[in-house]
Image (cartoon, rainbow, N blue to C red; front, side, top):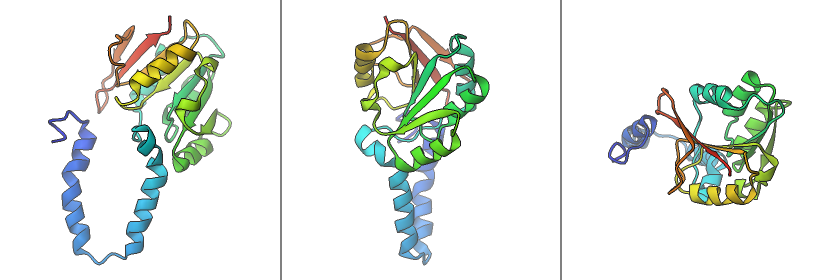
Length: 199
């Protein structure tokens, strides 16, 4: 089913292994506290996805390199990663493009804490909803979300972002709105960077 739905390879592997692992775990005498611990870790890393319908996606190194090369060379540009997860793209950009002013927002508490600690001194990371973020403060908005919120994100971007600013989506399209540019990347999940210049 996951292959038929066109899910990335890593999701297909997770789905393939789920039932055999559940069967193996069921055959072993594991204390219930470990199941509770696993559930709590999952809850604090994925709590935001319940409300936003955006799971934790990790951007590849190739995505970060493409972003660093494609972004304008103007020093002092402000970039925000909406749903920054564990902070991978921001950490990579801090290394490759120290001229950028980096920001992130993350709804899952543990992911926020880890990215905040990881990016201490490199980026400002806020705990909260991406919908509460004022996008007019940024020159570049990067998002690796899911298909579900893209129409709403486009409406927010059109309302708030300044003319000439750049909206970049990793892999997910805005329904009915053709991107100004598409960068096809040769990474494990065949990522695409879709870029819209705000009119």
